[in-house]
Structures are given as C-alpha cells and as structure tokens.
Image 1 (cartoon, helix red, strand yellow):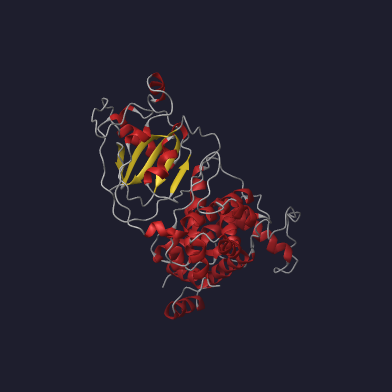
Image 2: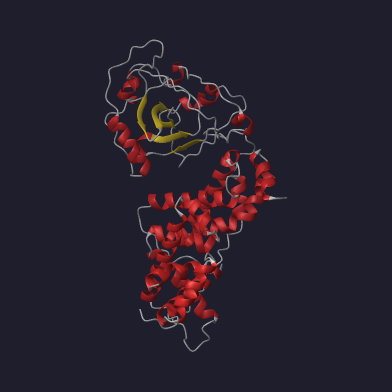
Length: 195
Length: 261
C-alpha cells in the first residue's frame, strides 16, 4: 500500500494503517530524537509523543509535503521544545552506539590498527555523540536532521522553516563546529590538516 | 574562489546537493588547495561515521505508541476525557458560529465564598516555559475590572480572575474550518493550557489578551466537560493530553487559547 493510501486510511481512524506508518518511520523518528537529546528514555517519550501528535493531526495533513517530512517536523519540534524546557544540561554520554549497550571498554584506540577498524569507528562514533552535545542547539538540530534522518536540504528547509540557502550554510558551519569539537576531544585524528 | 566560500560547497557535496557547475568549481579549488582537501577528508570521515550510527529503537516502542492511541476516534478515557482528533468528516463541514452559553462556566462549587477563593490573587506563575511567559504577559495585560453587568452575556463571578469580569464580548467566528485540536498541558499556577486550533467558534467569554492572532481566555477546568456538547458536534472528540496526573478537574483553571477572529 502506498504511503498516500496509508495516511488516508489512518486519517479516518484505521489503526492498522497507522501501525504500518509507525513501523516504517519509528526508526528515523527515534534516531532523530535520540541524537537531539542524547537520552534513550527521552527519545522514547518523544517518539511516542510525535506519533501521538501525528495520529491526532492526520486529518489535517493534506499531503502538502511528504508524510515523512511532516512527521519529522513534528518530531523535531517536540524535541526542540523538550530541550528548551529542560533546564539542566543532560549528559550525552549515555547513548549506546549502534544498539550495543555498555561496550565502551576501548578508551584508547590502538593507532596501529587499520583506521577502518571497528575500534576506531566506535571511538569516533562516541566522540561524535559527545561532540554533538557541545554544539549550539541550532547547529545540533540541523546537523542531526541532515545526518540522521536523510532529509534533503529542501526538506530540512521545510521542517525548520528556513531558506534553503540558510540550511546550506548552517549545515556547513555545524560540520565545522563538530569537527572542532572532535579535534578538541582528542579522539579524532583523521588525516592531517593545517588547522 | 577562496577557502571560506569553498566550505559550503564541500559540505553540500557530501550531501549530494551540488549542481554540476558547483561541483566543477569545487574540484578546481581542491586541485590546488591541500588545506581544503584535508578538510574534506575530515568532514567526509565524520559524515560517513554518522551514516553508520543507526539508532535502533528499543523493542516494544511500537506497541507503546499504538496502545496509547485512542481506541477509536470516539473513545473517552478516565479520569480526563480523552478527546481524539475531530473526525475528518466534521472538519470538512463549515461550522456555523456559535456561542458558548455563559451558564457553562459556573464553577462546580456553590456560589459565594467558594468563588472568592477560586479567584486568584496576583497569579504567581510556575516554572518558566515559553508558554508561561505568554501567560504572564496575559495576566499583566489584563486589567482588573469591575464585575460586569451585561445580562445578555453574563459571566457571573466564577473561578476566573478579576480581569475576566470585564464585559463579555462575543467574537465573530474566524474563517476557515480546520478541525480543532485541543491540547491540555500543565502551566504551573494555571494548571492547564487548552489550545483549540482552527476553531471557527465564537467565545461568549471575555478574552484576557489578544496576541499574535490568538485570544486567551480563563476558564474553570470544569468547563471542559461541557465543551464537546457546547460545540454541538455529535461524535466529536478532542485529544486531551495532560502533563502529569495531578490536574484537579474541578479546581483547576484553564487558559484557553483560540485563534483570533
């Protein structure tokens, strides 16, 4: 069944159709909210809230955009609102990598290993999650949308209600900021660069 | 083209968002700039690592999502009425302007002293949120008024602040009949905020504030019980979400935000 058919059915109250939409999109919504908040518990809550809002709002969704774009806007707004309400800085060090909990024994990568080796990859992923925490909210939002939901610049512009040119330049700035955070973190060697 | 300009091209090329002309420009610069080549390597490495960080949702997430939906768009749950989204059929109907009878908004308690106690003094607002700031603005903007005496739209002394006792205006229905969505969430002192989107209702209830295309009204929470009936829609439901279970349906007051006419 096409997404248009599913959304039309779900808008009329068909929970089975909605369940299929959940199945298709929960991973991305979860990933998006996880990378934005750094907390699996909050990501679960925000994912539920997003789909709750989607269920309620579907009668008003008239395919002005793709369903996923609309859904990610709900998710991004929910996460952004949540983060603004949260007063305390949350530790973003608790996010398990690639679904494997607790296996963070490798603190110092052995640089004799193949750079493409598993240890270095996981170290980099951990550093990226830590680095995301150090970005400004603006940079984090836009970079997470780009890297973890696969939205195009045009779609991100729709989700965040920005000009596409702004999206392009802001993503570039966010990448630069993340790179700087990684270099300061000390676990990112990468190829030599003059800065 | 200098390195500063190239940064955006570098980034966009990772995302496949470059035009052929831009790609050519980029390659031309990279051919002669080792610094930018190094930068592209680093950004590319980060980008690829992000692509491998697939977050796996915990098992049972989907079930949790689905079981929390209203069973049908007509179901109601205890203790708060769970009002599901308005049926699509209703949304298509052009809804006539209506007037909420003032009698809906009498508090459940007996008149007199109870009403006094229900009236908040200076509204000490709870934890800061963006909505709280607006609520504070609403409170500060609302002038204290003498009890109104307009019999036709009489809003008697009730659990609403003094400002609400100013003359009861009726507001013409806003255009456009989008289905209302009713949200209820905690707002510190107010206990709840109700937002009705897309309503083409008129409110027989004085507004506290008009701001940004919205009208703000203070209502006793008990008014919500009658809202569906007052809206005159048979199988209507609204989704009523609450933050926390400590909202007292009888004693709480609600800030109702509706689109301005």
